[in-house]
Length: 121
Image 1 (cartoon, helix red, strand yellow):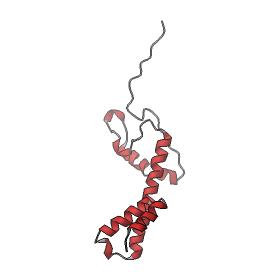
Image 2: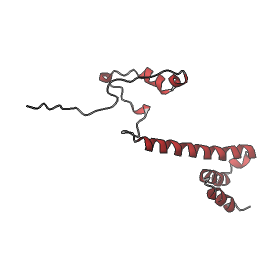
Image 3: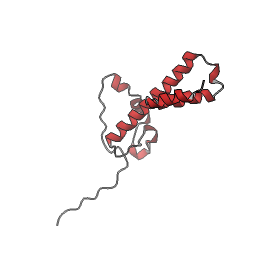
Image 4: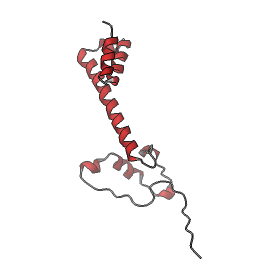
């Protein structure tokens, strides 16, 4: 069986991640040992992950965040900032959302330039 028509049909149905996963499976001899259900699940998972990533990327773009690539791993824990690393890790788990709690962050949350105030004479 020639996989090209199948791949082209998947792409025509806008299932490009499935098409890529299917093509990759045909190239990998280790995957051939798996059963149909396992292989099909891998293909569906690839499409699902691709769509989730696109959705997240679109939402981040639409949010127009000032620092769009910010992430928890990049937080600087310099002593002068007085940030509790354990508390940040706990907040990053998002358990507070599941428990229906609110979080309020006060103070500077990023490196900011010094603000100069000019008084009128």
